[in-house]
Image 1: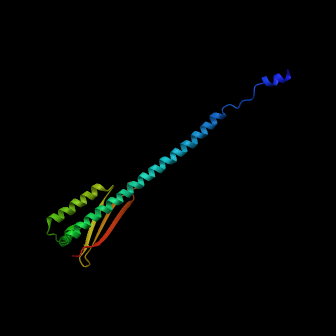
Image 2: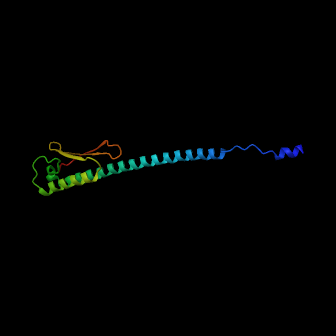
Length: 147
């Protein structure tokens, strides 16, 4: 009978231990998901910045290529307009290009293009404000435009 009494005695049960494990698991999962979200946001911001730099490079190459094709009117492609420009079409192309740059790149955009007549070099500078942190980004390109 004593042996039977030991068997009937209820075992001590640890209550809430499974719930505690589940809560710890949810905490670890939540922190992991939060870290993944932050990582994804950084990747999107870097991709956007990279895209802006690529677009600025393409726009600069386009303008400099236009100047190289029309070297005789190189003074018309300066920004702000400097020197005598006898070709209204070249001046209009430069104005349209500057407007396209301002509409394409994020933030505040400034473009300058200067021609050094002595060396025949054109310096093109595009400045814009980065989307992610508001820092100023600058692309500067120099090319020889002598005929």
